[in-house]
Image (cartoon, rainbow, N blue to C red; front, top):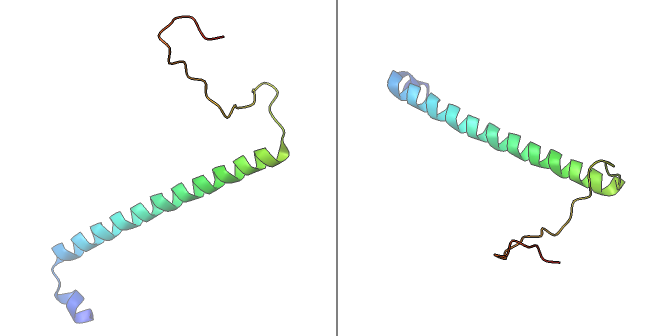
Length: 76
């Protein structure tokens, strides 16, 4: 194997190292995204279990009201 590496052209080694760096960068991005998702899930779970809300911030509704009428008057 050492003989193969020694006989490989420098251009090939450069291409392989560039490809390896790209793969490692992608893996790093995936791990960072997974860590951020896990952190956000933990924060969400903690906020649900404590039940404490910021008094200045209203509770988030599970239903989004979307007006699809063409009338300028809102529905009552």
